Image 1: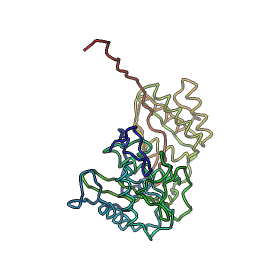
Image 2: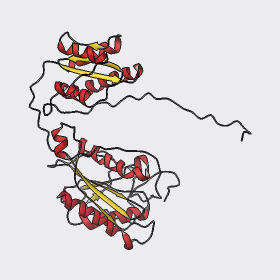
Image 3: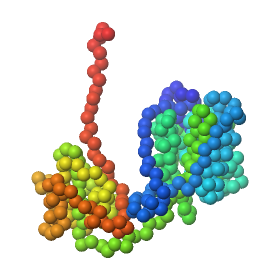
Image 4: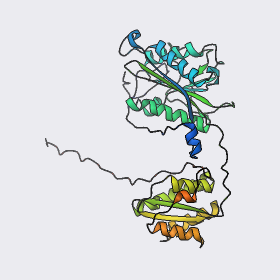
Length: 352
């Protein structure tokens, strides 16, 4: 099961096992209606999923059950009301074991054969990038599929040259991408994610892009208050720097930035704030904070007074400033944790 050189060559003729790693992944799951009502940024929708178990049909502990895998894939598609021909990416279990990969592709053929155009659906495996993360392998595949759907890009597989002799891709709906590709122009981007356990459990989930976001009804404000905080002065400066870099590169709506910073971030002791009418003002204000000892930047007025109160440690009713239904959140840099190295000194020669 373990690749001698630590490389996972999913679906490749040289596949010889998994390269193992360690990791963790976290996603926030909400009902679509609740996320929309709260103005959350929605990365993807999971319209259907299915879980099966091979049970008594399993041939052995290390031998996957293609019938159970096919049932999970078909069940998820049915629950999502998605036809196989709509799926353009399957983030497979793809462990890099010759038998496991061959049986997985055979199970996919059972569901997709005759129901999807030739070479219309990419087969991916994040294990070729970061290894098999054991209990975190499934969440890693889900996050990869969500990002692919979000950005409209089919990610490439590593360590693939030619398919394994036991895997027949010729003329079928599947191909293994070795370079990044733009997602085909379709009505909606849809992917599937598989994760299988050694105990015979098979899970498959359908991932699709979220519906278009309706702009909020709230009128444009004359200015916006951007609060930023951290646990230490060093982390605060890093947070300001990262926010400035993000605003300069992404050009998001300033109202969404202000709402996300106010409603979606915990307030720490070290604080700074910018009052800005537009993105250019925000960048200039952040520059002031980064190059001076000031902790509030922006013109005089009620918002600046509010910013001064907040920076001084007082509580602010952010919900009153950003009423429900009138704002939408956006993606922003996360907390800049301070990195510390903790090297372990090797024992002295002869020490026990």
